[in-house]
Length: 279
Image 1 (tube, rainbow, N blue to C red):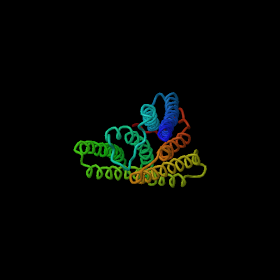
Image 2: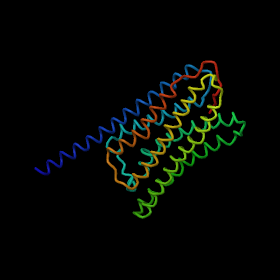
Image 3: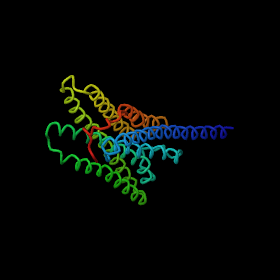
Image 4: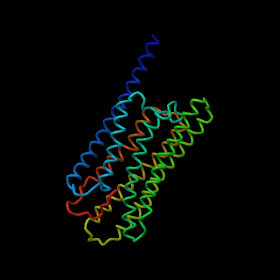
């Protein structure tokens, strides 16, 4: 009788975990569809322009959100990752857990680049170093965790538990530094752009809306990246539950993306290219 009760409890637990995975998949795919619709609307509004920053931003959102949603649907029984232990399948962990997060990082640091270019142009500051810095830093963000994952695979095959533990902490430190660097970028350039917009004349067209847009996006993005770094660091030392991991994805990605897509829903003017930057 006792064995039957244990079996029933396990079955319910597994079913609940898969239910959470499907809920996350639906939420991610819904947001991805929203970003795709917005991308199509912008293209129909401005077919004569190439890949503007706004279009690339929504395209990257579509890629990130659809990737997350698809992975939750395909692997509903493998989405629970115990970060406190070194991964038993490092490359699988990298592709399914870290890579979509890195695409998310690229998506939102693109906004930082956009704001930085606006600020530098307005202040007559040099621009040439901004894009190379953006691409170089993003290349490091992808290359370093991938290299650590490859090293973890080698140490796993060699049964070197000490090296695996060291690499796990290295991965945690690198990813926390990545999230905090994004938060610092939003504070630095979002804050500077916000202050610059406040100095515009009160009668300037669209001043109030742009202030609200920059303030909301910078605030939400900064908060989500700081919380993400904090939670990632905590989860590296504490064995987690399915409820905590469900809350992790909800708080650090789903809710911030939903707010930002709502804030940035306005279409650009039809015949005005001001503020547009080709990628």
